[in-house]
Image (tube, rainbow, N blue to C red; front, side):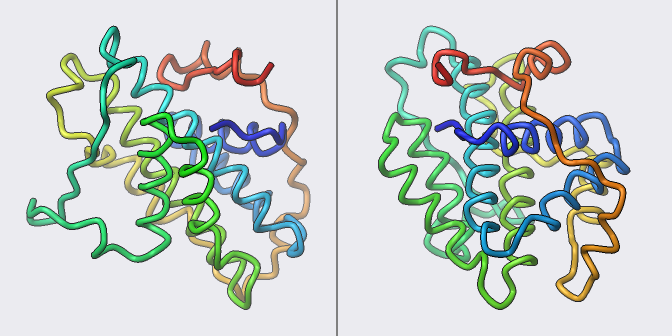
Amino acid sequence: MRSEDPEAQATAHQLVHCVLDADQIGLTETLETVAAHPAADLRGYVREIVAELINVATTAVRESAGPLRDRAAFAIDLRDDGNDQVGIDDLEPPVRATIRAMLADLNDSPEDASFQLDLAVRGVGESTGLETGLDTVRRALTMTIGLLHWSEQTEPLEAVMYPEPTADEADLLEQQLAVTDDQDTDEDTAGVEPVGEANPADVQEQHRAVPDNDDESR
C-alpha cells in the first residue's frame, strides 16, 4: 500500500524524520501543512498520508523478517499500560481500523487494507474533521515509529511488535501533534511552505529504517 500522491508521500516521510530526529519545530510545521489543507479534500489527503505511513512501517517489518517474509503470517499482540492483553475489538473503531489496515498490508491483502483505511478516515471531514484528521495521522505515525524501532532489533521476530516510543519521541507525539479545532489555521500556517514532492531515495539514505518501495511506485 503506497500513496500515489507525491505531496502526501513527502508529508508522511517528513513526519517520520521529525520524530526520529526529535525535530519539534519541523514536526509542528509539517502538521500545520495538514491542518491548512482545504476542508473539502482533507479526508482524501489524510488517507494518502496514512497509506504512506503504513507503507513505511510494513516495508520495514517485511525487510526485518528476511527470508521468512514471503511465507510469514503477521499478527499483533496488543497490550495496555499494565501489560495485559487487549482484544482488537475493544479498541475505538478508527484505532482498530488503522491496525487492521497495517496487518492486511503486511499479509498481502491490499483490498482489505484499502477497506480498513477507508474506515480509519471515516470521520475526517465532518464537523470535527480537522481534529479527527490530525488524530488519525498521529495514530498512524505513532504506530509507524513503533514498528520502525521493532524492525531494527537484533531478533525482531521474537520481540514485542509494538514497543513504546523513546521518551523524546513520546513527548513530541503527545505535545506537538494535537491541533485543536478552534485554532485559526490560516494564521498559524502563515509562512509555512507547501511540502514538496517526496524523494524516497533521500528518506532511505537518512534513515535506514524508512524504506523505499521503488517497485511499487513505477
